[in-house]
Length: 248
Length: 217
Ligand SMILES: Nc1ncnc2c1ncn2[C@@H]1O[C@H](COP(=O)(O)OP(=O)(O)OP(=O)(O)O)[C@@H](O)[C@H]1O
Ligand SMILES: [Mg+2]
Image 1: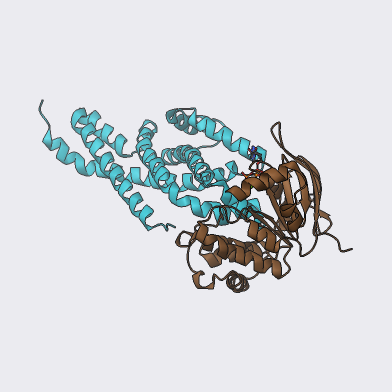
Image 2: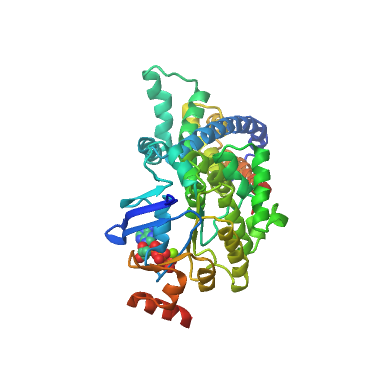
């Protein structure tokens, strides 16, 4: 069997005395797309942020390609490991003082050490991949939300990550801009990118997910292929959650 | 009350010499204070706890003591441990050390006001702390830092009048010299007020011009 890209073992996270993650274990295989759903406050964002160390887990281990994340004492090595997780934020978090191309190029240039011209060329390629090549000189404030999110995806891709993590990438967008972002994500999945996606876009989950995880109160309450989880959820929590969702 | 216009007319050029010294002492102190203050500000943002503590203690000391005492410390106390300055240098050192603490606070505050998502995005693409500061946070902070830095510069110019107590022949000292000979305090202090006022208005105007020229996004 191929080694999982990500192995999560017994992940716990407390904020003060609030246990937000209460022991999450899962593996993600190469090329797999995992969709995570769950009620607000169930710990989905916290889980993603513990994977790439935006939060320090209280307990448990995350391995990337077999290597424990954050185990090295050198800031540089930990940073290099973190850059192997592409992270896409709900609110894009583009760098407002940089044009789209520089938003994408700055990581390859400053972190991966590419020459300036190579980094710029790579940035243009990645922008083309998300259909943003015609906007490369614009600042984020000149772009729509959907365009900003696609630049943010390109910025993450330019680091040549082993896995892409998406935290509700379309929930801050006007409805008419959602599809362009989902289309880009679908293409990525089709190209074999390994992805973990927190989203409530059911059409995306049905079409693209290999596996759906339902989180509740900081644990994985149920998981399975999308047909099974959406068609015949076993746990009462998942049934209730999906019923709510389809009423919205 | 009778205004002695002759003294006023004679004083205008005499005081202008004092203005030059005030500008010199302020300019040198501003440059040194800015350089040291930015260094301290970066220290305050360091990941090293000891560095942060040292900067915090320094800022706390400067803010918690009168500038006049700091000037006396530099001018009278430091020579006792073998560090000796002429009046002008002592004045510059005292004003720079004072300004640096306030500049450090502006830098720390300016960088701290950048929303957390920026740091997180930079961290997520593998930037280290220093890279995050240099490429992401400081470039976004410096425009917002211009108005508070202008305020510090204005304070510095006003504070330079305190150097009259260690006989730096700046604007206030030049005025006092005239008063001691002719005993015309009303005329001279009014003139001094006008001189300072014009200086400070000019600085404010320059700062607004600078702020306009900095890029926005
Ligand atoms: N930095 C923090 N400090 C304290 N508590 C936090 C912090 N971040 C999250 N929490 C708490 O952890 C819990 C889980 O939050 P999290 O954001 O992971 O949930 P979520 O499943 O992503 O919810 P949503 O669907 O609303 O995004 C919430 O109760 C939240 O208040
Ligand atoms: Mg969330």
